[in-house]
Length: 325
Ligand code: PMP
Image 1 (cartoon, helix red, strand yellow):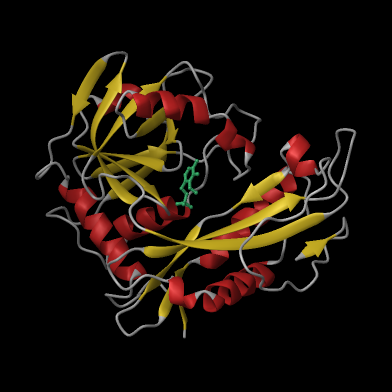
Image 2 (cartoon, helix red, strand yellow; image 1 turned 90 degrees about the vertical axis):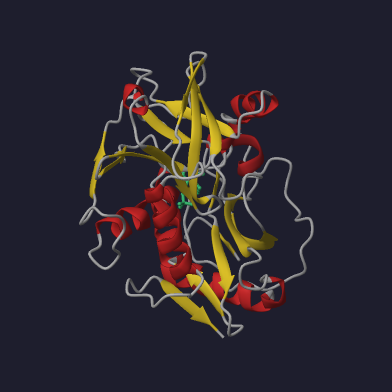
């Protein structure tokens, strides 16, 4: 679907996957004027397909579009386009337990613009791909390295929105970490170089006793939809987790020192779902989290609570899933 600066998107169409034509002076190619989203469709055992909170992705794109000076599709247009795209590609949704269909909505400044300014035309498109686990480790613990030379985002920057440029800044640090055998990079804040921010494509949680802490949303980290859902699941009386009656979730500054005596650490994101962290390396020192066979009990139970809801194995008391027939 396309629109001019008035923001009235044309009704879109389903076309085969393939290259798209863009002017060499398109805003997105020259000035990074682009936003994306990521969500997944899971197949239930009865063959129907479930989307997980697609309106949250629509709202996040809308919020980001203001920061990027772009018009965005309405929540209804976004959710409808996601539904139509998934239905047209239903055969690509893997069977239950064999992965999911990853959905990638993109909003780009497709109009030609030479001087630095917002583009005169926008394109909203969605493509999909079947996917398995994000990390090769699967649910097995991942190994992170804390990066204190590169930063992902700075106060006043674009770290809080899902703009394509944020990912340009992490490519080098992520490649270096992977070459050294780490699964991914954990970033610190750019002001104090001391407080946890997030991993290249997921949010981070630290468990100590019955408190679960996660960096507060203050503009430099992405407000993850999995993050928000895990907070609600952990606080919910409906999901009994461990011996603890319920968890206290704290959204605050979490210092790097707190990792040293944490019981468990895990990451959340659409792609990674809930990934337990097995070790974190910082300034050459490695901290390990033992857990039960390497997977902490809280991470395991949150993973099970969330994925059984997303795959339709348990009743959706949260009202988070949208069934497509
Ligand atoms: N942080 C970053 C930088 C991300 O790219 C993502 C993935 N969208 C997340 C966190 C997790 O967000 P969500 O749970 O909405 O996928």
